Amino acid sequence: MFNTIIAIAIGYLLGSVSFSILIARYLRKIDIRQHGSGNAGATNTLRVLGKGPAIGVFLLDIAKGVGAVLIGFALGDNSAWVAVAGGLASIAGHNWPVFFRFKGGKGIATTVGVMLMLSFLPTLLAGIAAIVIIVLTRYVSLGSMVFAVLLPILYAAFGESSAYIWAGVAVALLAVLRHRKNIVKLMNGTENKLGGNKKGEQHGV
Image (cartoon, rainbow, N blue to C red):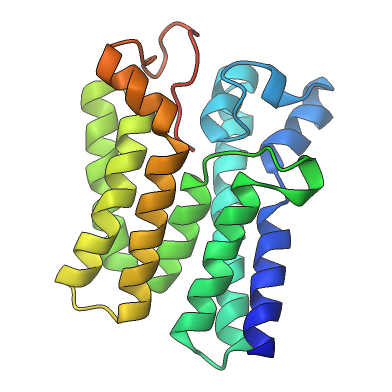
């Protein structure tokens, strides 16, 4: 139990390191949450700072999830549940970072890192499906939600452990929760497309 608590604490603190905020402060001396869509994630970084910083943020946010799961495995002696706890904590940290007044991103990039470490192939397939959706519709938010919702389905189809399937359920519910405003905009036809006009929240990472 103690190791699980430590894994959760480390995962949360690791996730709370918001690279989009830090990079925006370093490059432009701005709070990225006050620009673009107001989200501290890779897509808003693309909108505000450009491709290079956005790619850096995306990879670093993935790395947070990877690191949290690896730490969970190490502390839990390869326990799936401890790894899942640490990984989910890193996503929570990204979304509600203690270092930045609990206002962060939507956690999709960090989710990618977490779930890739838990089970690579089904996560990869969910990611490919998300990319196809984004390419066809240019809605990053829609692709992000498709990615998250597919995870527990594919994990179950691949016969993964109950710990991983429940992790998939948790991230799917969290993704939908964090994208609830985007869902309304998608239904109303007002959601911005990738590369389109800057009319509010469009992104999912």
